[in-house]
Image (cartoon, rainbow, N blue to C red):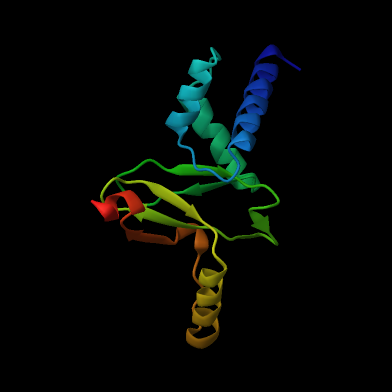
Length: 140
C-alpha cells in the first residue's frame, strides 16, 4: 500500500467516525471541514465531497438537497434510521430562520401509505420537505 492510499484510508476512517458520531443529524461539507480544522486534521474540501459522494453511492450516507439556495446536507445511516432499504425520515424547514428539523413520524408514514394505496403515487421521503415556521419563529 502506498503512503497516499494510507492517507486517504485514514481520512475515510476519520470521516466515517465523525459521521457516525452525528448519526440522526444533518451536517454539511462545511460543518465537516470545520470539525477537522478544529481537530488540527488536514482534510481538503474536495476530499470531503469525493468521500461523501462515494458514501452516498455505497448507501452509508444520505444526501439531502432541500432547495437551490442552501448547501446539501448529509446524514449517516445507521440501523435505527435505515430499514429494509427505505429511509424513513422527513424534513421540516423554517421559512424564517432556515432551521432544518429531522422528523420521524409514524403518522406521516400512514399518510404516504394512503397516497400510495388510494392515489397510486409513491413519495420519496429523501426529497420530502415540509415548509413552515419552527416553534421559535412561530411565537414571534
